[in-house]
Image (cartoon, rainbow, N blue to C red; front, side, top):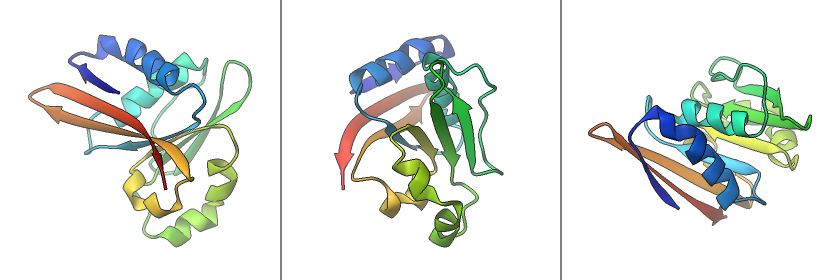
Length: 140
């Protein structure tokens, strides 16, 4: 899947398309430079899943938990401040990653070796104000 995004108004449609393209997947690993829009897209994904809570980057908490429209938990990770993998182990990452619930991760490259066997890799690249999103199922 490859989508060009040139304005924020497209994001609700992009979020629904991303979820619709990978309906059986629950783990979405986001990659991209700081400021490229990972958190903004995750907010739209959560909105599409019926989250009524305020969705924000869990930079300091590392993980935020939201409730979907049907009451299922959704986990949102930001590993930017993670110093080493031991911190991910201390969080009990396995309980989240293998819960069967939606997981959205930012700064995933810091924990890439811990990712589930199958996940959706979402890369966002910005060039001249236009963002290109590519997404594919990956297996480790």
